[in-house]
Image 1: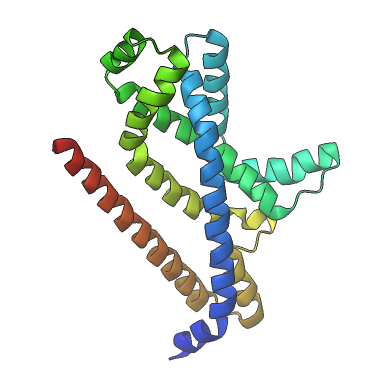
Image 2 (image 1 turned 90 degrees about the vertical axis):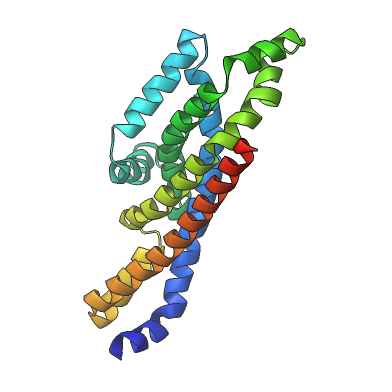
Length: 220
């Protein structure tokens, strides 16, 4: 069939685009986790300044479309300050900023899900707030948050397709380049959609498996 021949001819380019998609998503999520932890701690801080910073950041990022954020950074900031961003760097920054706002809420919820008695017990043993958070609260919170973190990775992976607007040659962009050569849009977009579906299904199954293992461990 024609679609299988098209897949065979296009596979090297599509796999190259897929590797960029996964690379950008993984790097962005790692950075988003780091910033998300910081923002999550800020959001439950007793300091009004830190709490305000976290709240404003989350509201602005979650209240604007990802595509606008990508265009603002790549073209707007780049033009205003005379910076020529590498598309992949701009893409990673955009996804990190976007995902970190959602990760902050995940971490805030995970931290608040840990029983208050854990903090009180840690403080009674002589640990200061920082050590109690780092050694007692966060390890328990991360266990609760793992399924949500994996789900955010899936969302971030899908969001990479939007980065075609700043010329990143990820999976969707690779498909568009092939379409420009052969004009077989229906078949190519079907192939691209199937590749996304396969990768995301695998990640969803892994996420479900980990969630079941965590649930089973909590019941023991």
